[in-house]
Amino acid sequence: MFSENIKSKLNQFAVPLAIIIAGILISAAVIYSNGGFSSQKAAPGGEEKQVAVDIKKIDIKNEPYLGAKDAPVALAYWFDFQCPFCQRFDLNTLSALNEQYIKTGKLKVVFKDFQFLGPDSISAGLAAHAVWETSPENYFKWHQVMFEKQDAENGGWGTKKDIIALTKTIPGIDAENVSRLMEEKKTEYQQEMEADKAEAEKFGINGTPGFVIGKQLIVGAQPIGTFAQAIDGELEK
Image 1 (tube, rainbow, N blue to C red):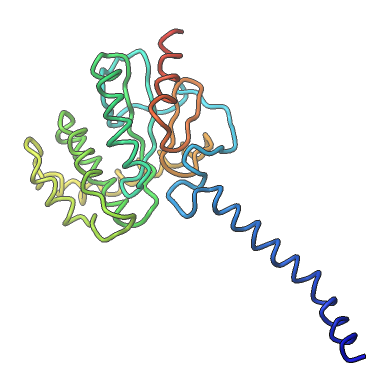
Image 2: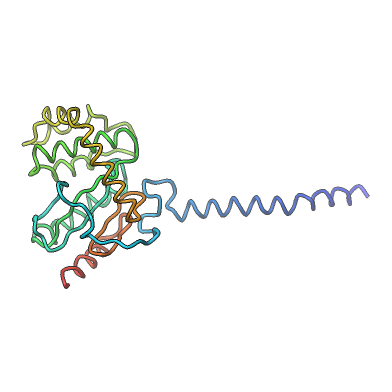
């Protein structure tokens, strides 16, 4: 009788316990499928909710860009300076695209703000606008040096003081002027950054990096082949 009572009580808990365990396993699977906790809400290369996109509907005026102003193909690139996946794209894929498509006049990359990972992201975004305003010919060099210097996400490097010290090492950029503009035009720059982020979200980009080329949305740090295929497709039109 005693053992039957125990068995009865265990049976009472068996179904709820199974439900709890199933819930934990499902949650773990969701986190894993989304690449864990990263600056991309979907996995790098994962699927976002698809919405209609068109590069012609994206505001690319007065934005930092790399390449010929009248290049036949434009790629809009939303990024965060603290994002490790953006770092991967910038230092590997973008460098390769620069040699293959940008320097040959086929592609223009437009840099769009999605600075959302904390105060250091905002400071970097403000500095980027100031560098573009004061020394556009050196912007890309500065942009890549920032990613080369990047440590772990919110790892401690990236305050305004850090950024200005790094900017001083790049010939052709007046770091003191950059520092001044970061304060004097802070409100204007922040409004531009917020507009970029809102625009990204309208097109279904909810993390970094995110891209639009032609009428195609690309999410995450995809391999160069993904971008090459999209660029070649646009060049053939």
